[in-house]
Length: 212
Image: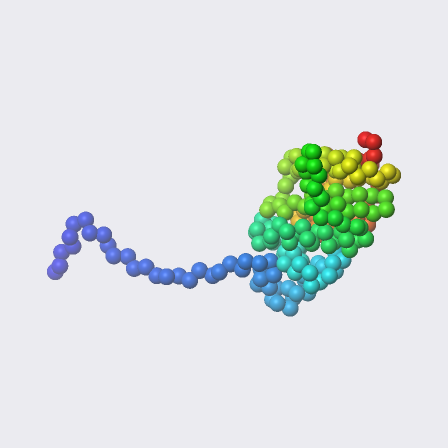
């Protein structure tokens, strides 16, 4: 009988276990949940709800469809590029009848506004927040105040008499519209309804007016 040498380690057999690859895009994630046909219908419904062309920014439509199904917002956001989200926001606002300008730059002090959307009586100064996780009121206070400051500077430079300027934070989070420091925080899925109802006489929001 062969003796074991002292201090020898027992042999351990190892196996290569295949690890399933994670789907990397929102559309792949949605198809994994629903199947290809149902996923296409769900994404198309999101586009219709927001009034944007169904063939544009399909990954964002799929991402929003995933949030409707209760998918983790952080995972969904990580699979989207920030510019995809911003493009989609601009399209949705334009579809509501606003004239849209992108990446408006201000100087002295240097500031940038993601989207400026203008109607005959109202100017929306929009900050698109590609949150990786939902933010509470405390976490939103600083960006809300910063957007209000940018909006005030822009209104002073533009000088459109008779128009009200409203700072807005637009997020992907599937939640209700809320006001933080007088700034509306609007989830993209509620944008169409928000744009249809907001007006310059709404006392719940902090409008910036000429001369203020």
